[in-house]
Length: 228
Ligand SMILES: Nc1ncnc2c1ncn2[C@@H]1O[C@H](COP(=O)(O)OP(=O)(O)OP(=O)(O)O)[C@@H](O)[C@H]1O
Ligand SMILES: [Mg+2]
Image (cartoon, rainbow, N blue to C red; front, side):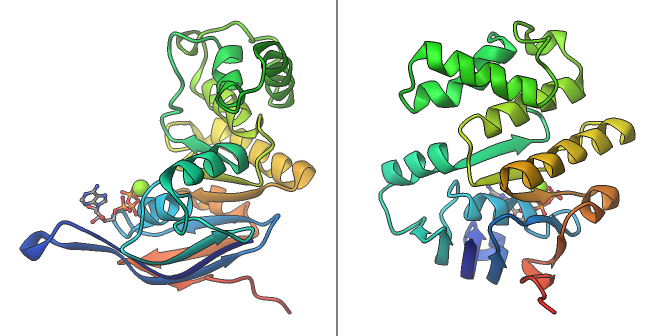
């Protein structure tokens, strides 16, 4: 479970201060797939970065499965991120000089897994996203949709409990977007991974269990699951 309490995040000071998050409270249950939507600049990326341990809030608390993300040292927080979470970005963020297999194996190498074992697991993750035939291809040799699949394989290779995705379909056409969100949905259902997707695309948001709406640094609806 992801719990956020009274998150405040500001950028800059004085006249140029930006209040990106204004006392945000949020609960996401393990195994949910939720979307975060709202106008440009309302704080979606900031919220994702604060939840995921990338960007420390000015105040407030984030816990993920009981782990208090900002009550530990930076090193412990980085280790937690690597071990228990995965990231998917709009622009894929793959390393151009590494093959698909090498890109996907990287988080495992970071965790100290032997390269032989890492390669086996990376290959399995690429097969899971339908790229078993492209193990040795470089990012420049793959389509946008295929590169996003590689990025998703890299996100799942450590079997994380949470995947954070910031506009994962932002660079893709409608059909490819649909396939990518379908793949995320499949991972959510089969692996039980909690998935948090920031999106501008109403079709992507509608595939999720819940829509969290933001406006001007606040969540205006969907901050917790409604149980009937
Ligand atoms: N590193 C930064 N330094 C200063 N201001 C920032 C920084 N990052 C974000 N902001 C500001 O914080 C506010 C929220 O930005 P954020 O990137 O979270 O918006 P967003 O909802 O993700 O927008 P978009 O849909 O355009 O990606 C904006 O006013 C933005 O200009
Ligand atoms: Mg953003």
